[in-house]
Image (tube, rainbow, N blue to C red):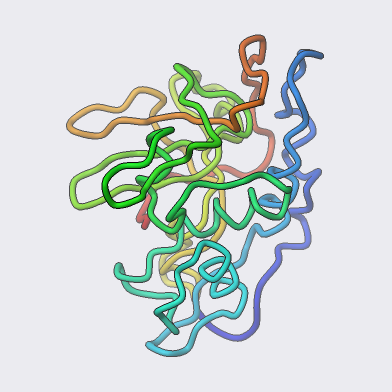
Length: 218
């Protein structure tokens, strides 16, 4: 929300990722996660029409071309971040990937939302997209691992996840947050991976980087 694009120097693709990668040999590589982890710390800029160029790059990659701002609920960029990360790795992302709910189905709905090149899986694995439905909208990020010491929670790497309150990044940044593995009260997770990704033997490991508490999201 201020200044220049922030990249956390301690948040390289190896920070917290080495021990949280799938350990089984049958699990394929997840290059989109290296890309996404490299964006940790990127955040919104404060004020209307004062956008972070990096966040706007996420939006443009997802086809969200009718805004010049990266803040407010109308310009939520969680889906755009996921879409950009997949595209950078050569993975065909969801259609209308700027919408979080496009990562909840493998066929297109009547509005053209969906991920035909993805498939829904029944449990979280490293690198899977995780779309959470909630009252008033949805949120999407990537599964980064389990939260150490809390097997009932998963670490979600995502964009437009609330930063530290009282700081410039409070409105939304790329970070890793803790979420309940099994949600309730009208909230549900849907997990997806690229259609050709072998996930069945993958076992989710602890994420060893910093995991913050779930706050605001978009």
